[in-house]
Length: 145
Image (cartoon, one colour):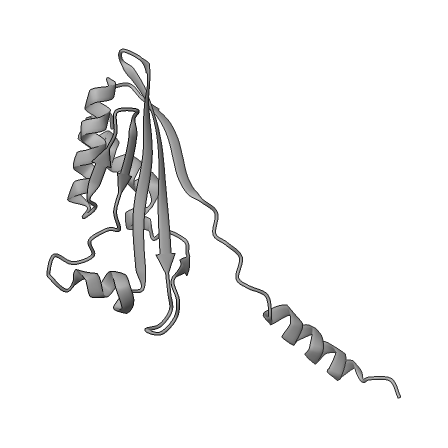
């Protein structure tokens, strides 16, 4: 006895849902800024600090952050650990091209979840924390807009 078309369609539909969700594209911006490297480093650190990130810089031009502070209170760790629905961190690379031009590569890593007991997974970055928006803020701080 051959399986009916409805049974085949049901099996195909269930098998199609069984895969894991597609990983989001990396949120990366690579730009050249017409400003000296020291001004760019200062602007990157200032903008990311204002956005709630703790910023660490090294001498080779790497800028890294911890997870973004979602609320300014002692309960912020609960959002980053369990109750929140999204958390992000930033990595940037600042490289001089000449004395008045600097290359900036900025990447935002965002993790999200749908519910209280779900696990954190890579997710698409929300617009306010996106790399493009952070670059816009940095350009604004440098008065390049």
